[in-house]
Image 1 (tube, rainbow, N blue to C red):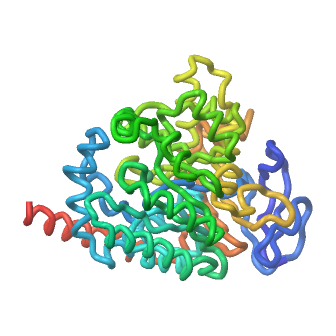
Image 2 (tube, rainbow, N blue to C red):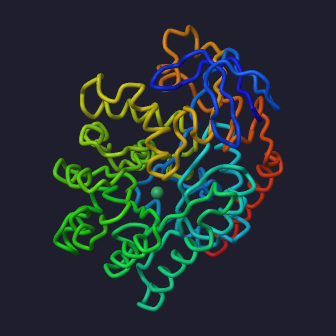
Image 3 (spheres, rainbow, N blue to C red):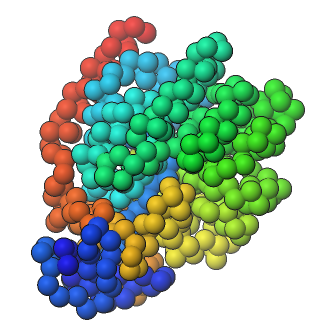
Length: 428
Ligand SMILES: [Zn+2]
């Protein structure tokens, strides 16, 4: 074996069992009693989980963390985020993605889906960090003429062609028209067709706010899901982010079309967008993953918090404490997200990619150990993660990130974020 994760409580098949995990050629070779390996990670007194999968984020927005808070989505975007984003330089996007990568590795996230611009910088940061990711250029055509709109789509397709399979196969790509309200009709239709032609996933924001639904009815005489359906948007491999304002018929239609959803409870609560009907989505058979959304609207990338919120928000919304139990939330954060990203990870089983997060249980808030699955969802946080492994490579051991110089990245991020804010305010 190349790697042995020794003596842990391993989450497999819905329960935590005492076992070692042996890794060979980047894949889980054995779950059981494993001996002899080139490298050993001590997992005694630890919970060994499949790595968390962040199914929807905008990693480089970590530089905007705390820049503007306590506003609804439209004012937050238009008055603060878009003006500062206009001043982002490629190196800012690079450092923002590196900062996000360090945070994800430290909090047990092993794979993420990202939609932004300057995505070649994000891809390079992913490559160096050792993380797994599905990446797409966020296509926006609002305020652009036909030629510029075509260039946006070309940028998205060009990125797909250049980066699919990069990072020793850890990087996959998607086509990402940003949202039905930021892209024109022709671009939405052509992006969907291009995703089918290129054989990649199509990903967009959908029905995030009540205002978005009302505007869609005003502009297209249809709610967002019906509008996209009329553009053959759901004919291929598609998943959407949010789905806060989906009704029962829309959930059924999306489930029948095999459309998945990245549920982002923290961002939805913070921007007061509402609470997504995640229990209904799961009941309808939709593939549900969990995302943090960008670190400027969350404001962390800690998937443990997001998993806890997934369970709690569902119970609160339905007035029923039995909906979305711990195991269901944990599976959405791992296996569900992995399915959306099109990776085989998200499960600890022989033959699967070795993407693993090890949680140290030696803490007052994780005592006593009646149920480790309960602890993973309701009591643990990202700071409890001690080892992170992706593709069989150790990205963090005992809290030390091995692939990226965390001190250099945080210092550079602080400095670049300060200069970025100064440039933006000088113009305002
Ligand atoms: Zn988003």
